[in-house]
Length: 427
Image (cartoon, rainbow, N blue to C red; front, side):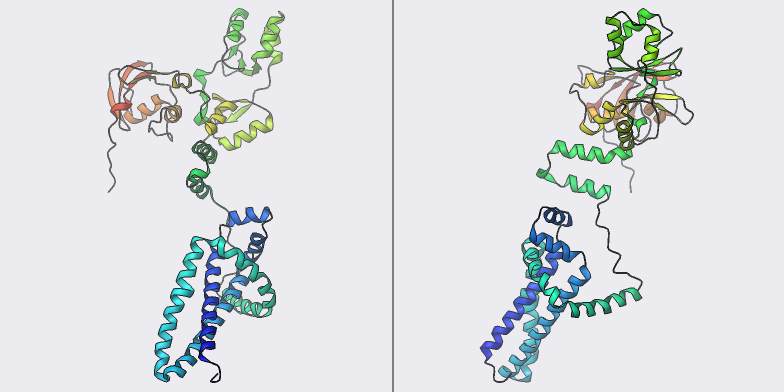
């Protein structure tokens, strides 16, 4: 070594520091790659992405190769720095050389390349993957020995390197990814994706039309009343029952009945024969499962029943799709006929109005995990049946009870513009 010029030694030291920077930066870049983007690029035939994906399938081999090269060049750089120090200043200069080399490696071979790799991983990872692929084949015997020893120590500690971590996203992680997509996904599409993720938490009971609001054909009614109901029907399909809604015969497509009426062949027996077998749905069925059930049974309407088999309401495919894409109408009075805006900014609301519809359409902050109707929400809050004229503060919203019918709240005046902040009882 004494015969080698100092200029050559300094040049070799600089090359080793660059190599150390390459190993350090490429390690960070490869480990911080977005695995889903990497998989997408690899499936599209991106060669560097394919190589990086193959390397990351066995991270123990990749890390073994990188650390083998990084430690080799760092130790060699330390040895060269010692030789240079001895030739320039003797033994007293070794400590100075060690301190300077530590500072140089820290700045130029660790912090700077790793920061760059963390900010732009693909810029470093893809070229590095091109180098590491053949280098791994050349150094495989040595890497294999290193991995055997390291994996043996891991197994002794009860850790198996074959148990790779599952990189699939949970529902909440996917929700966060959608919300942070920003301009990459339009706002409306974000809402639709989030609604799809929420289908699992919502049941058919939450969106059904309650039984007291279900329109249907009673075959015990006179034929002229049945015809009038068919002519005034707001839906394309209607349930058919006999003597009461609990005695469901089936569902009929209004078009079939009107076709028979035009040809003067409409009779109660014809309606009975044209009915499709009723499709019953348990009240706790999640919406994502029910969407698949509608598709499997080729149905567009189902009757919701409780655990005793009693009819609770009706749910349609349109109701379910509105949970994903939003309301098909833009006028709140069309979506919520039980809601009447007043000149003073308040609203007259029927007590049977669905709470979820109020929240989704009017964007009011009401709890949706309890009673399904406004009447139920008020009764749960008061824990008694109120009298007309009672005023209360519900979730910060002032409201007056205008009318009571039987044991239920019939009409409420709601003042959303006068909402007060809810008291905070948290410590």
